[in-house]
Length: 425
Image (tube, rainbow, N blue to C red; front, side, top):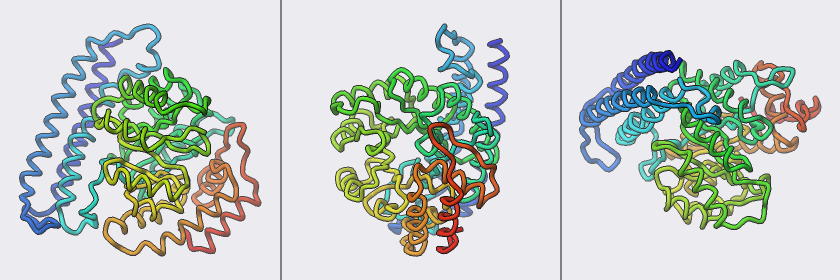
């Protein structure tokens, strides 16, 4: 059986390498020149960048060969079913991680040195900077996960400007799903990369159980996810920074591989457990390769400013409150992960692009604030977002899981009218 899995893994990886090579060639075509002036006026020989990109693909191949060798020798221990739920995903997932880490990073650096891409040269972006949807979780009418619906939703988000999506966060009703269901949904989500190879996938993996959080986080990276967004253990609320540091340290050491990125999830109004600035600084200092930053869903403008003052661009901050996006970007945030991005990602992307190109973002921010205000009149957000996806974009009327209830018709009409009045598309 293991021989079959190894063979299938190698075959999948070969196909993926072919796709990766095609992407590299496309980047070369897009650049379209050998020499350009960077933003400081210095001459940059892009041929060297191209050569480095090709070299990185070679590194991917070398690590793939090692992966297959390791897989041949791998022994599945009793009780490891969660971590090794799909052996085919292990080699394929590590290939994705290496592809993203080595290949895409050199491409991003090359793009930053090319004029005309609308990038702010003063900003040093993390590789996960961008606009993300906190994706809802599609369900069948009987309440079971709908993997096909998830792939369709992710395709929709990619086409409307999202750089990626967070699965199984707050909007995705993550705590309402079992570990097995979470992994099945994460595995299904990988299909979006067939049509959108650069689409980034983040998984919400935090639970009150340290062991389960480690298992889910490790499994997400083995499948090839770009990052994990990890809630603090949210049952005991009077915990110290020392305890939280030890908890996150265990996850980082045991579950986050080289090339993987863990983001803390700061949503104190829901979790009851805030992540202090000192805690973030200690995690970043102790694990600079793996601890990337936070998803900030505090809805607190002062906190966003404090993050910028303390860390600048040394900490990846993805804002979780649409109405504060422009303020957060000004304070040093590098993107967002929001519920409203399921519905208004073109406007969010316009704000993000304008910030990097010094363009006007006032008009899209008017629509963004109006949309967020309308949605917040009808909490919790998963139900109303699912209702609007069905009404505006012809998705099925996906239910929500108990204890949540479906949005009322009145709530749906109210938000739809606000969208129409503001010209939200």
